[in-house]
Length: 321
Image (cartoon, rainbow, N blue to C red; front, side, top):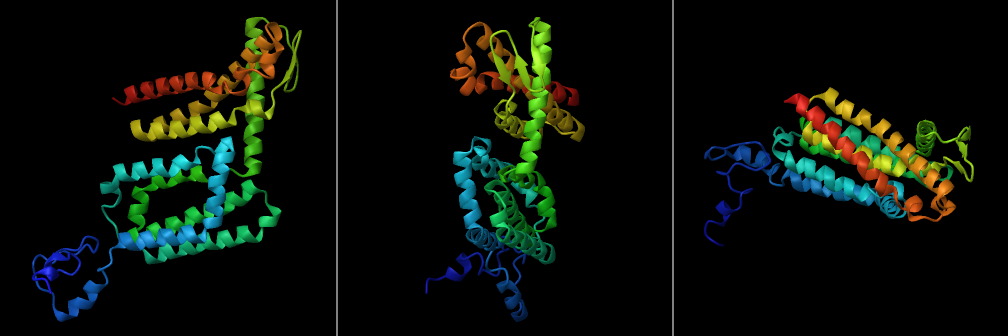
């Protein structure tokens, strides 16, 4: 036996305050009755939560693996792999505040974890009736609910409240239900068509319009679903959420920044449709079919929107000081 080994192991040393128990013995020797209570804290809650997280990964492995595949094959969800990293950054940067009052919350954590598993089983039961998007919405939401329940179980409701933003940010990992996607896309289509119509009038171009279809002298274009810009819209919203959390304090300024994203997106889409239509009508019709600007030039119109969003952020930040 190595001399003093007992004292060198923090969780077995009786004159050492345990890291996760919240008890400080202040150098006092525990009585025999204290030994059993100390044993409850010999395995730190961090390790227990790690085991719990691994268990959640195993239970929801099918849904998580399909989500990863979706993120690499669907441009609308290509951001998903970055969401846990960004959320983890916010947790790490505020870790002292978030975990300042950690405390087991057995009842609340257990209820939420079980609720997530039940929701998951319901999703599996309805899998045949659901498309991949809606199925993953249910199963991935279930995984997040159950994992959040574990967080509350091991660290308490105060920790949950302190970590509310990073936890809510994880919602961006959840695929949007098909019904909601269709409604968003249609809203963006209509908004884009209205803005493009305004631009055509301002420029003085004669256009015959019927709904989402525009007829010019040489070309006819339709503001299709692909013109809605939903992928860039999702990216803009995520960037806006990150910016408001990092730089703004008051809730109403945060709301103003996020609400400003909607008109910016629609204006951006309208500019893109107008520019491509004019190029197709007066330069070469291929600008509307085979050009790089049509298929992959979204970044050209995306960056000005980000610059304007940062400008709005600067004005809001300046008003706080």
